[in-house]
Image 1: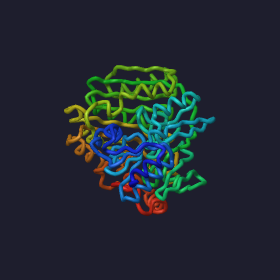
Image 2: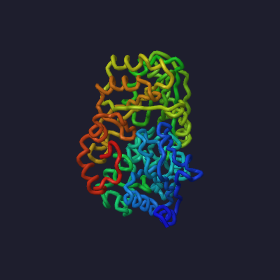
Image 3: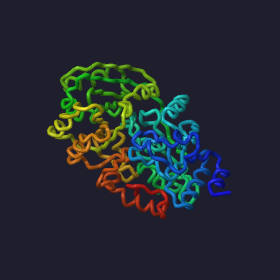
Image 4: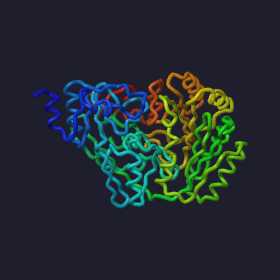
Length: 431
């Protein structure tokens, strides 16, 4: 019996090789930018033991190995020419009181639905197929974040398969340095997380709003938004996406009428009235689903993005430069996400997530090969905080160590040396 046959015989899940009839389906991540990558093996893991077997095989054969939860990594880290540990089958969700234990393969739509059944939720993102593990381990920004913080801030424990094959439970008392690093430094760096435990929050009823400008005054909208959205009450998150059209969208824990008054003030400052859809009393899990069509992938085609945080407002000249060519080609987009609130009430060193003093996140999106993206990014990055959200990894980033991790970098390197001294989990921009 050869090595692969022995591995297949020991697995609880499946071993998919290039001659397998499902290989072309199983090998592809969600991001179309990386769907041509052809792994040597995909292990569809059904247990932590499967993950450990996959890691052992990778080390024995000198083959790169990566975990895949949702497969949405902007830098292609959930794909490899080596071994993909597909965690999709590890998607159990168990809720006891306010605590949820969630398998690393669960997707956000499944998480919100399961938590709704218990009257609970998490501050997290909108993409239905995004994996909970990747989102939480890199931070997790969402429409409840200004009230309840990052998804990572609600994480109370994680079960992790380490490079040496051991499975450990990590929290503030057990493997505390590992747990610190897992909250904000991204997945696949220190081990493979197979389940996560969260302190959930009560699911609120919220006011859902979406204001649409069909022919947007982009520069006016960007300028008005950056002076308004980060200073709203924590109960209101208002994000803006602008391109050929512009949409101001979000959630408010205020009643419908005071929410309308806040939105009216913004529209008056921006100078042009939009089409408005404002609905109060919406269950939060339904509200999240209603924004799935605003995901970057909804534009179609193969897209690329770059991002940065700002601790202060952009200069008018920078706004004009971003707005000038934004609508000149399909697919170009500026996404603005409000920070502040609970995000910034956690000390920078308390978790690996170092971006605790920012006003907003700017993400630029364009079709692959469009020179507008890098040109516009260089213009904006020069006056930004020069910090980048770890969940929006950027392969072109020059100063990635401090951009992702700030003053937490040295401690993260110590954790890497302690838990993965041989760099089993290695990729460009790995700590």
